[in-house]
Image 1 (tube, rainbow, N blue to C red):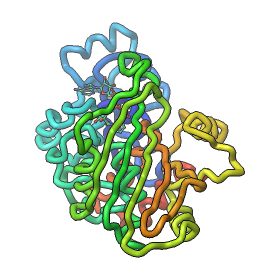
Image 2: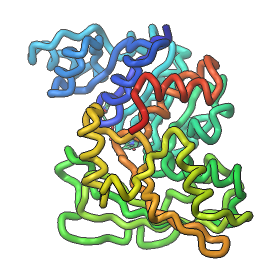
Image 3: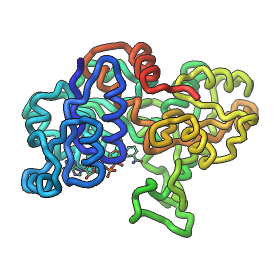
Image 4: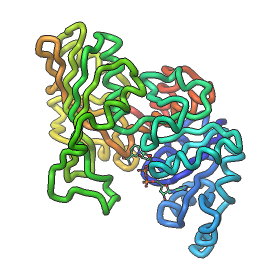
Amino acid sequence: MIRVAVNGYGTIGKRVADAVAEQPDMEVAGVAKTRPNYEARAAVDRGFPLYAAVEERAPRFEEAGIDIAGMVDDLVAEADVVVDACPSGIGAENRSLYETYDTPAIYQGGEDADVADVSFNARSNFEEAQGADHVRVVSCNTTGLSRLLAPLLESYGVEKARITLVRRGGDPAQTGRGPINDILPNPVSLPSHHGPDVNTIFPDLDIDTLGLKVPATLMHMHSVNVTLADAPTAEAVTALLADESRMFLATPDLGVDGTAAAKELALDAGRPRGDLWENCVWSESITVEDDDLYLFQAIHQESDVVPENVDAIRAILGEADASSSMATTDEALGMGL
Ligand code: NAD
């Protein structure tokens, strides 16, 4: 069994820990937290050994009546791999800790690309992470775009991608985020950081991205225009995407008219936390005009990177190839709606 440490047990970390616990070849060695909040209690309830991430704050756990198994250093020392899911920038600060104990590490998309040897998306470049010591799972939006662009590149070739990202203002629990009543060009200048981030996965891809922020918390929405080298029919693109394990096609019969319904569908399906790990592509939006493909896809920012982190663990340890790792991950999670 691969023993996985999760350092930073928030929105992403707690989901990754649960996903790891579901895998047949992995177990959670422990999770590290800075404070004894409700998520710390949930970790203990789930049976995950809990470690204090900051030494000076360790006594707070005991004051709150929560037993800890030790300090984060102990956890990193004994784990086979660590998933760092700390807030943006903290992962880079933690890199020396992982190096001290020679523990390979996986970082999240909020870190700069140079935190790691390779940026990762399982569908697109699994092999590049095999045997690397430091891997960055790209952000929720970059993950969603990579999953879409990989099959398009393979099947048709891409001349140019133009994506407008309508981004949620914050996650549901991020009470301090906004806007509350506005629509922000964000950033106002082009490109948004997403295009260059996609280039960490596909270095030669010609891509322009524009970003907006809106008063929503559920999901991001991408308005996609890709000029293809070989122009297929819309039906062919639909069939291509339907074949991808991490794509969910919202067909008209389902009546999924937006992100709220997509999330409701995931909740009704019994998904943990209502997570929608797949890209949600509206099949009716898939349109080909000459060699231009258009579509809308929604991305559940809190969860689409979760299966990618699980695959990154197998890649970094050289335990599997892309298709077998993705199949194991998907089956253990219950992918498919
Ligand atoms: P979060 O704030 O929900 O969780 C981070 C957790 O790390 C919190 O529990 C925080 O208390 C803890 N923490 C802070 N400092 C720490 C330290 N020094 N050691 C250990 N733990 C520490 O953040 P998140 O949304 O889970 O984001 C984590 C990373 O994932 C970021 O890089 C982010 O950009 C990326 N990401 C976030 C989303 C998203 O939509 N939430 C999507 C994809 C990627």
